[in-house]
Length: 180
Image (cartoon, rainbow, N blue to C red; front, side, top):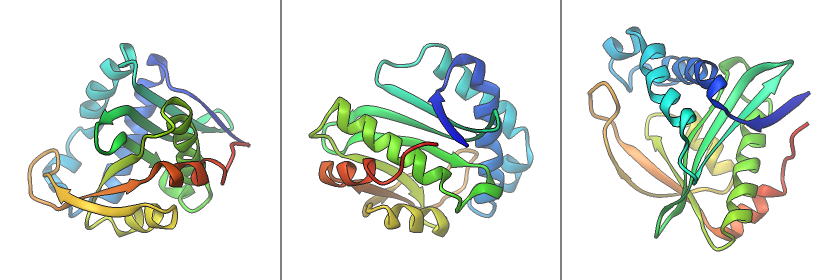
């Protein structure tokens, strides 16, 4: 049974590992091979440890566990932008579990939290243009493409697209899937 819980400092390595695996499997050809073939785990651990040690009051990290193992996570920055509202900074699912509802459950939880904390706020995220699977996932969940910018970590140039949900869409998503 899938279980959701808040991420803590003790989860930094598991979050970093899931994040590194997701980047290596989803972003090949989008991020530089030198970066992806390097020590992405160490880079992600260095990024997540301080974020989970002293989280910003508006940061909400959620883990999805199956049989006690981390199989996905999300990180949302509430009230991130005056125009767009909250930012879904990360949502990653173990590659072998994609399409099994883990991502939908995490997204539903994010929508619930956003609506509870700020009912008039929207939600947005950045998706790499070449990441068609992610784009289709967010579109199936009601997000619309609202612009582009940016470049990836480790160098290179790719197109990032902002996907966004209105506050009304967040209410709908929040009611679609529940953990367990």
